[in-house]
Length: 472
Ligand code: PLP
Image 1 (cartoon, rainbow, N blue to C red):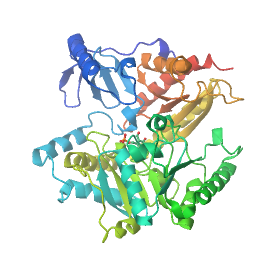
Image 2 (cartoon, rainbow, N blue to C red):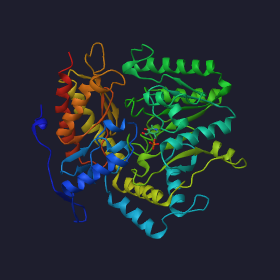
Image 3 (spheres, rainbow, N blue to C red):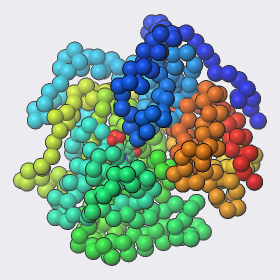
């Protein structure tokens, strides 16, 4: 057992960046102003406004960020799993600065060099004939537009998506979403129907092996298609690897089976790679790990680490060709914004120069997987560990035998207490964790050093002793 819980996080008054420039954090007065402006004027996402206390952040560098007290946090959440190249990456910052000096914005109906280059480079790594890119402002609108394309091309209206999914906060995207964030936003789009995806640890099909889970989940999906009326179904959308709802990696053969069902019934296959695209799983696109080619891939987050908002849809030739003569009815003032695209082009340069995909695979298989797997021997609260690349879930339970989650589904307030305690233990050890329901996810920036990765894992290992107190 490590002693990380007893080691106070490092406290500083500022930091020196890679260029040797010093950045003081600003102190108590600056912090008080940030807190006051935020509390009085900023309306926050997904929250009861009076019940939150957002932490003022003074600076970030690489895998680390600091609050105004100088408390240092190792970011094991990559912010919202978007900061794939870490804070203040010099290549991305420089690309944005240069682009701002050259041409800060240009409307989407004109051709632009960085927009075109980014689309070409995305097409160059996308599978199959996915050769064209429609740029959006983020992930939710990418899914909105992917669904719109599928409906137009098929002439059908219905869309099938899974329970335990998140597809974004806008109207169609939240309707597609299969988690509690949808509930308060209902009534949702009536042409969306939900089905169960595979989840071997908590199988909806009482499967006992991954193979059985694949077979039964595909039989279930085919039944849903038939019962909903195959001729009404425009698209099936799923997260290639389910992100927020559990880092659920599809068992062997499942995605191939979905592809086959889509072909059989003339349905468009949309892979939502907003969270798992651009290196998170050690591949450009997570579908590459399964050898499956969807018709549309949606992306955002990691495409430029969120330095400037950007998302999009990568489109197969078959669908893009349909719109050669039929106008595509959709658009955004900032589609393919040059500042965002310049950061995207720089992201490709960094990935290729620094071998980011190779290092994600290496750190995932050599460091993370063996380390967290070894925890199963000494943490009774650990039900299962799963993932790949630099994206892993620790599923915390009260009993390994019954698999009762450490906290109930969608728990809030005192019911969520044990998970809040685990998160607090991580933070007091200087690690900013990603927690959701009864799970801790491991999702650091892809540029994290091995020393930082091992340090963060040691802190989480120690924090699990808090969860162990609730487990039998
Ligand atoms: N799809 C997935 C899988 C996501 O994880 C998210 C955000 O977390 C979205 C879509 C929505 O993206 P955005 O918040 O950029 O609209």
